[in-house]
Image 1 (tube, rainbow, N blue to C red):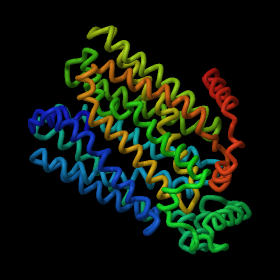
Image 2 (image 1 turned 90 degrees about the vertical axis):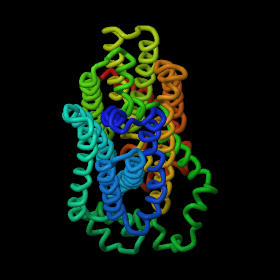
Image 3 (image 1 turned 120 degrees about the vertical axis):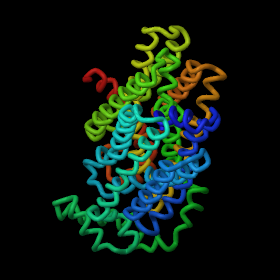
Image 4 (image 1 turned 45 degrees about the vertical axis):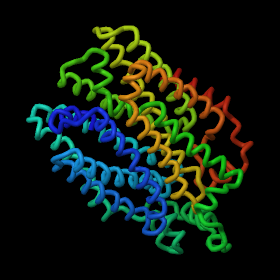
Length: 450
């Protein structure tokens, strides 16, 4: 949308307010998909919830491609948002539930990898199709988004259902069969299956006696309250530090720095996409080796520095070659640090920390916080930038990013190498993860190694 919106403005003659609504409505509406996704995935399964998400998104993308007015474009955008809401909520949960403990972190970061790859391909397609006529180019830019969801449809005939969901449905033998596909050690499979069965409460009748899920989430126990603060908080901080403003409005940022030519603007966004995708691969390699928390420290501190520097350069350097260079460096640095930690680790943590009986619904709640903050940032960026300048807006983001460092230090535990059931016990025994100073030292050691 970041590139398409330039030509949509020209073709459909939309206003700046309509542009903000068109960009931001995706995140706001996606929270409905995320909210519905938790309950849906508990009823029909994780696998078929992903199928539903793909179908809804395809319909939305097709409507946007054929839109002849702002109103029709909005209908397609709303449907795409619902599909995305389902997708961003269920994908990390499914991967966390099906992955072996030792590889869970790197595998759960896969959605973030492919989100970044999708952003990069979006930037590339924007640049590639920008030479077409104004009436056609933005439609082609939006139409290519249908292709990945078609691939998901074919993949669903191959991938298995989540073993933890199968256990919740009393389909224990099917769950054992799925676990054997991801772990060749029969003894470990039986141990893991026993943990899952115990967590699901099948053998002791907890499943029938427990409070309704949403009632339990609204009046949580102390351990669940800690989980909710950690999960919801990290999701909100991921967005209020302004990453979606950087992704959606990078052409406006570079235009403010002094780049005027549309092709050069879109070429600069490709550099942002390449950087974002390259660094998410580094996170995938490191997350199960150095842990979640050291990566979060490096990420949040680095983002704070880049956002602050960008705000200063936009305010002081003006529209010159040095200003353009600093803006490109700071934007690429910001997305690089985001991709190393805050981007993937946020979703990994949210999919790991909640008990099995609450995981889908609680993860949906975290995704809602993420989408609300994303929508607020996307729908207010242009108005805020006009009021306090683009530099002032990024100074505000840098303050939120600094707060996120303190949040990670105080409220995020290390979950590397622990089974999902062990992580649940970790929150019940809060004193066991007061190792913040040691983990901050690990982050410093990681920086020295890099």
